[in-house]
Length: 96
Image 1 (cartoon, helix red, strand yellow):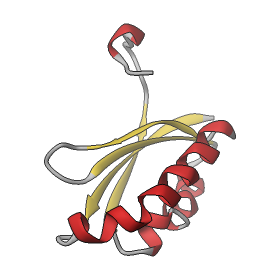
Image 2 (cartoon, one colour):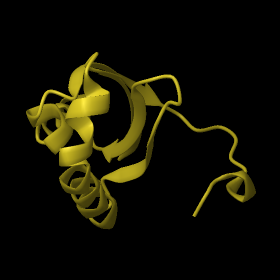
Image 3 (cartoon, helix red, strand yellow):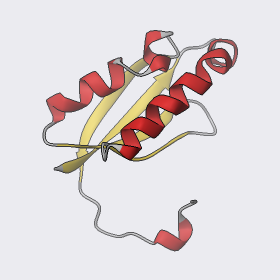
Image 4 (tube, one colour):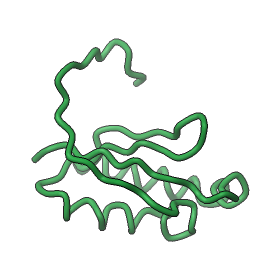
């Protein structure tokens, strides 16, 4: 398996549409994390998000995105997925 970084764009009205769906979105991400399919995720402070998945191939990532409650509710409007090789890591700088 390898890492795939998804750079996700949110809808213009995500400040309104995201809150009601956020609990389901976080539950979904927790399940992916617990299944070994999610390395990290979080919103950008200026809109959108970064989600790093663990998958065998890039084609395996698309369903993980489309099944996310945020995608189904229209909070995610588009994304780019890139294979990602982590070369340096400082775990002390990452939140728990």
